[in-house]
Image 1 (cartoon, rainbow, N blue to C red):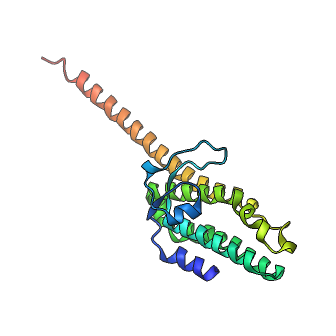
Image 2: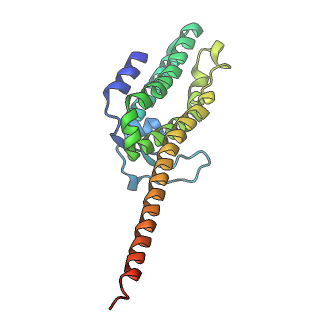
Image 3: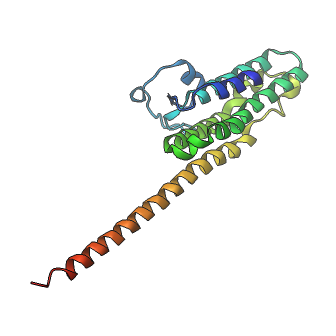
Length: 197
């Protein structure tokens, strides 16, 4: 499971995106356009957006790993598989920001995609284990959780997008200051050279 996740994260092009509605199982199999998805107003709804194909495939792999947990009769094997599912998500946090560091720093769209991916993962983490817990081996049901990973993903996305926003804000402020200086210089030349006739 971990080798599959690593290969996915290292082999796929990160800039490829797909429309996400919040339900990774539906998003992984459907090819809906943004016009076909409607926000239904549920409290835990995910605002439809573009996420990376890598993220959708990774979450699908996490679901597959959790299905394996449900099929195993041994709590020890189940705990190992459950930990592998958590580590698949940790691989995303470890690989994507480093492997795509230069692109994330220079292409604002990719920072937005990473932000969306992190929010998408966080959204799915809120209910992911609850879908499978009743079918887990009984000895591991009480301890199985992934909500502790929520703030880590939210912080990762917010920090990358926030850094790009601050860079662009500083660039716009510099540009605005340059325009004001240029404009002031033109006015001074215009008023100083017009009275000598």
